[in-house]
Length: 252
Image (cartoon, rainbow, N blue to C red; front, side):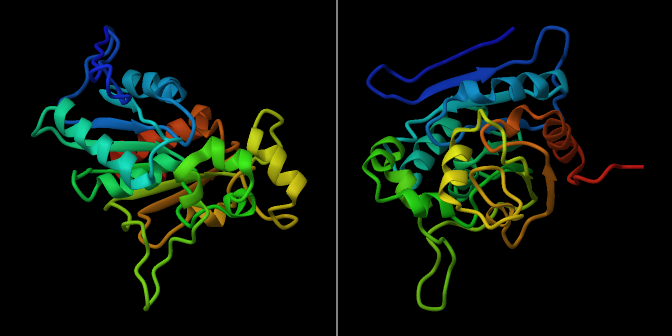
């Protein structure tokens, strides 16, 4: 059983609220899980993970936002407005994000509280690959404003605060370490451009170090590429574990 809703045709943010499969009744003590996709992707890239969470008894909500056209702050504002409008007030929320979605949730959380957040391959330190490619016409056209913002180094200094908000409380980060997947498109570019040092752990798009940030409640790596980490069996198991327990460690 599923239900969907969408904004008027004049607006290009498509909203999808997913109910759990008929065989599983969502537990009301669990939060609704907000799923946010990455740059130049759609909500359908998170559909397999959504089904996995629904089988685990969570209700999920996802949306497609115009990531190639809007700035990071602009996308976050639209998502926050949609969550406030579409989801019932009073029920706790959690979030699972992929890549750029992790930066968006840092902005959204300034308006909407989340009980727990799991970030899959987030560019929390910006993107070295984006910095190498940002002046290229094809990169600028395809990845838009957000792609340019990912090329920044979003770290605060004494002279100027960082442009991205701090992590929401109780946030886990899961990074990938498989850089050689032939179907990871950005991996082709990073290897040819020698973005990462020999032996440096990375997922083909981000170095593991670029995903980490002060304030993480938990951190883990899985043998997955950047583009498809949300489909990795181990990553999915860790997501459910953290949403349930607040830790990535196995509970005896």
